[in-house]
Image 1 (cartoon, one colour):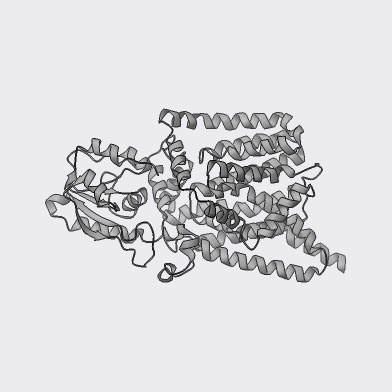
Image 2 (tube, one colour):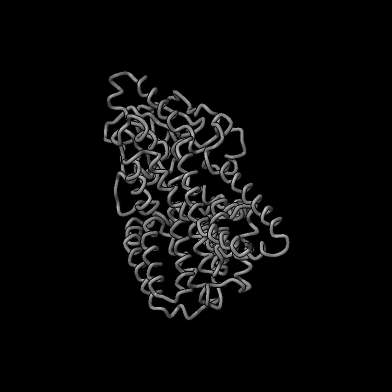
Amino acid sequence: MGRERAGSTRAWWRWVPAGTALVVFVVLTVSATRYGWHRDELYFVVAGEHPAWSYPDQPPLTPLLAAMANSIGGLGAVRIVAALLAACLPLLAAASARELNGSKRAQGLAAIVMAAVPITLLSGHLLTTTAVDLAAASTITWLFLRALRTGRDRWFVLVGVVTAVGVTNKLLLPIVPAILVVAIALSGPRRALRRWGLWVGAAIALAASAPLVVWQAAHDWPQAEMANRISGRWDAAEFAFVLVAVAGLLLLPVFVAGLVALLRGTVAPAGRPTGRFLAVAWLLLVVAMLVTRGKAYYTAGLVAALVGAGALAVDGWLSRGRASVRAWGLGSLIAVQAALSVIVALPVLPLDVLGSSPVPAVNGEAAETVGWSELVRQVERVRDDLPANARAGAVVLTANYGEAGALQLLGDFGPSVVFSGHNAFADWGPPPGGAGPVIVVGFRGDDYLDAVMTGCRRVASIDNGYGVDNEEQGAPIHVCDGPVDDWSAVWRRLAHLD
């Protein structure tokens, strides 16, 4: 009877990774449209409607995905793409545990823990470059583990293929396989560096990266300028907070257990002497982000594999001592962390209490999904209040790409009416000569506005109607007579990367 029960239990754990991935997908899909668009999604859809080999602030993959999904089913379809990518993360954590010789229970635990940590739901709710980047980096890390376990070159070649796809989403993605190679050189197994598949994969990744790098060079390295601006806003306390939050505060012991087990050499790909390279790679990546003042969430691509390693340690811990008590304790921690992740990452709170809750302080992106339709209606009212003879030639100038994207996608303003100097929108302007009056949205500095526009008068202030404090709330709407100089001269002052 005992053996029969153990066998049935093992069979049950076999289905946990797939079931967990399905739950993640369903939860993300059900909550997908409860608030609204995010500013980045609005921008990506418009960018994807202007197909290009690259854009000043990113490669083309996410804009193209966003535009295609929007053409199929609007915001719901856009968010489904992100949900599908996030649903892969529990599967990749379980697959990593399997490559590390974990039991069915360890694989199931890895999937459950990965589903409960905040980064999975945060990345899966919005279709941004992070959603694609996290799935690609996690896949690359798993492929490294599989290549080392099997000793087969084709898995290293697949690393190159996934990197080639991922680099069309974010130019920084090749850092992940590069750091994994450096970690192998430092900690072993060094024989892997002589595999022909590794270098074929590297050649594939370099070939895919070359056109994007050439585009950047031909356009004076706009992404380097972006990186400098971002690093100037770097905050050490925020970096540490995000580093912990990515792995989930309550489930941090699972992550740390995986890190320690890998460093000690007690967890390794089946039949291989060490899996230490994985922990070394994560540490190197953290150091690289600290030195370059990068974002802490760039380390998230290794989290699924480290959770997989931690699940092996937890599996062994559950088998010792009072197993039922330990299982209930672990289950409670997972349940509480999952609940916290849902509240912080997903639009579950009523909009009228979101602004007074701590959620925007923890997840500022939640606030940025509120108020776009209200902004569009306010700008439409300002336009409709213009005299009929002025309305025909009026154009809209916005301070950022979110405002411009919202007006184009959610209102009755076309691309020949709405303009912005922000990022790629600068390449799609300026307005035609003689256009005016100008409805100016979101410019908070009167001195700056007076330097580029004439005859400006404030006619309204943006109000999302829910008291949610975000970048748009309270921003002014002006009506101006026109630019202080011809549009091409003024456009050089308005164009900016941020």
